[in-house]
Image 1 (tube, rainbow, N blue to C red):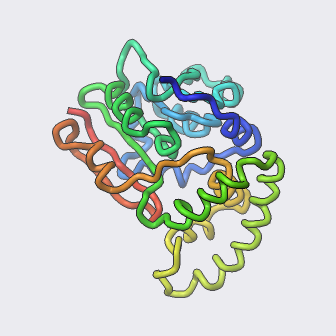
Image 2: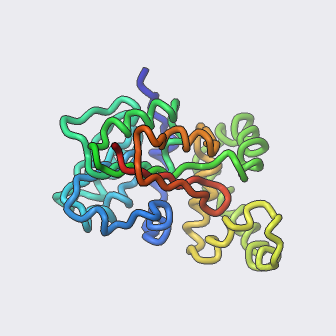
Length: 257
């Protein structure tokens, strides 16, 4: 069954832009954008098209796929001839040829069936090609998994988008003083201690977007370590790299056998 379109993502990418090269490089680590040189690249869940724009500086061809925000991505990438945007379900999309590089950044955990989605991404990666995934982790995310997800189901997802944006600004303003005071102390036991290190690097608007993303996402399946390890099974991949990122997410990549 094809995943249903979710207007929340279209609304998000109409309102926010994400041009953070720093974060993209962090999320695909230890892979580098330079590794995309001359390659056919699939951006699975391209959203606004910002990562496709970064990859297109190096890749011969970038195909960006998104079920909900393809129209926004097309508008943002229209000036680059080596980017093609396709509207499709990540778990069901099909192409004539596999890709040299397939990446799915911050999207697989929002799909109806992350396992099925990963299997399709693997299928679309050529033998000897690289598959890269960045996903929210089950570990380290109790506050997001339990109280926030419950609050979203009961209340937040019923709010108009504009109100959620305003709430995101207010929450970011309230959190910022803590990030620049208490979270500067060597108190690594605090929740999201590593995560907030990035808040001190990123611009205010990007932090607002991160808060909005947490409030706006209609569904999130937080991924356990053993699950991502199963995805990148040694039977299917070599040169596998799996590492936690900022205590709240997983970076996984491997070369397909």
